[in-house]
Length: 282
Length: 296
Image (cartoon, rainbow over all chains, first blue to last red; front, side):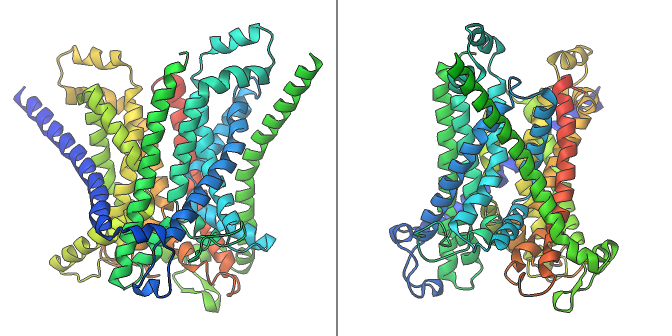
């Protein structure tokens, strides 16, 4: 009996140690980013674009990257939303047979797992084929592809939880499929869909590998869809790669801004979904 | 009525078309990458590409062996470091922790899974690389710190939210009755975990590990920043390595100026897509089965 107790104690200790390790390391990531980033974060970092000699440690900020990232993230979220809503609705059994629906879900799961560098390479090839240069448009298209599986799968998870009775009540009144979808399913799933969009936005805005080839990098805020665009993840990546300490400081500040955006989006999505879900029939 | 019917059929057609479109995207990506790799496959054989260690793009010599080994080794280190820790954490959360604490940790892990990879990379450069340098010196193998080990550690940290949360989901699908039956026999909680939980969720654990593996295998930025990027087969943990995703990311600039280079890089992308796609397909099939049957 004593050896069994001992085994229990040993393993329980190991588990607590593991969990502590995981949480401490992950907290450490946040701590390092804040600790290094906060001193370097100044108002001019946020409001100015790089001036002459910026990459040698002189005046300027990363407004180009902040605005660029927001353009990319918002543009891609919008495109992905337009595409993913019909797909998420279409996975219901009114529209599609069970086989095709589960096949599509599997395809989306696999797409979700595909590394973003592969999307980037694919985007680069396609853009080269059409003669497009690295631009805001290219970045938005690739990020849309990256976000699409995330959005559809999360929306579908929500739509699936809607009670069948609710839809049946609506159909019993003689509605058509699209009427029920818009009146019952959309209303029920809306909070979850908002969360899905924000989740995908958070993923998209932080992704660097896919836009490395397709969006380019520039010191200016883009004026049209065909201009290259800077982004926060790439600002972090390029600035940490320089040997000049002042520029590296700015990489830390850029990382902190990126982290803050991602966290705010993540927390807002949780609050929204919690608040909206009060009015949902379960 | 006619108008309503018309609207319905219009909407249905649109919705079905969008479903087909989404599936088409997956195939278009696969086919495009495959077509782009054909020039290099026409010039050399697949086995030569995979097994040659000589990488001289200017001479048209593309040997992927160092890169494939680099990717596999970085991923392997990450998995060895993270699997035991993540599984033990998931077991604790599932079997020992209070519901409230579990909910809290789940929330934290979900948020952490969303941290962009450049931030992990940055923290790797700030914290892990110097640590590895000190460790290397202490063990008598001088290193810059930008090494296989640093890449593995960063990847281990990055995949830990994935493995922990999937494993936790799997453990929670096991019915309470299965736990109570065995606890009623007077065994300790750990014995219950060993004989009931781990045994009945074996497939799910494999799926969690495979999903973590797939994430690690294709991770680009974080690894690229700490792994050193030297195209040689690494001989020790403290040697630099050069994984496939980093190869693509570093060389896209010259891609168009050297013949066959673009085709070679697309070959790297295709390898990533096939390996990651295949593994995550398998993992999702397992998870689907678990979801359908309750638990295996």
